[in-house]
Amino acid sequence: MDSDPLIRASVASILRAVGDDPEREGLRDTPKRVAALYKDIFSGVSLDPASAIDTVFEEEHEGAVILRDVEFFSICEHHLLPFFGTVQMGYVPRGKVAGASKLVRALDVASKRLQMQERLTSQLADAICHALQPASAAVLIEAEHLCMVMRGVKRPGSRVVTTALRGPFADSVADPKELLSLMQRR
Ligand SMILES: [Zn+2]
Image 1: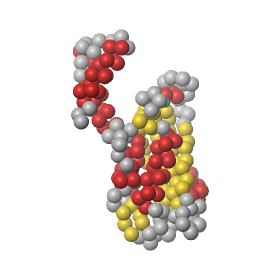
Image 2: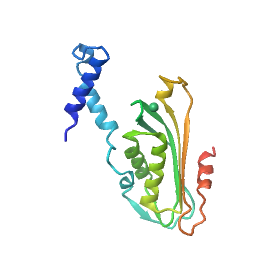
Image 3: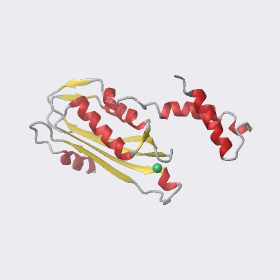
Image 4: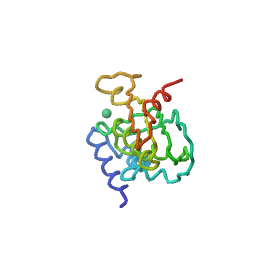
């Protein structure tokens, strides 16, 4: 279904509801632009982040694999405002590894939807576990929320940190806390 006409009409209604005129020159194309924008930033809705990790290699690597400082943008589902920051994600493989770009793709799928930072963190850790069945996995996200900056408590520069630890699975001894401490080491 093409959601474009519905988004355009809805945005025009909001512009009218806040007291502006959607027909004035500066706003005339705004509903169209917002519809195109939404198509991108909500492109992960109803997709499974784990299915983005679709290239998996059999590899007997025994140490940790960590992807550091990956930037992301998402939309807070409570205020429809962006939150954004960096992700550290990693796992200790048990025979399967994924290309780094596939992990980034999983992050894109999970972040391009109406989100909460806590859920984004869990969904990414679960996607890694589902696709790779690792010995352990960890995700750490640090983000700034515009809903804490522009409104409410108005605290620019403050960051929310969330973690998700998974494992150790099966009979492995890989403690996900070790992944977390590697992620935090500078
Ligand atoms: Zn919010």
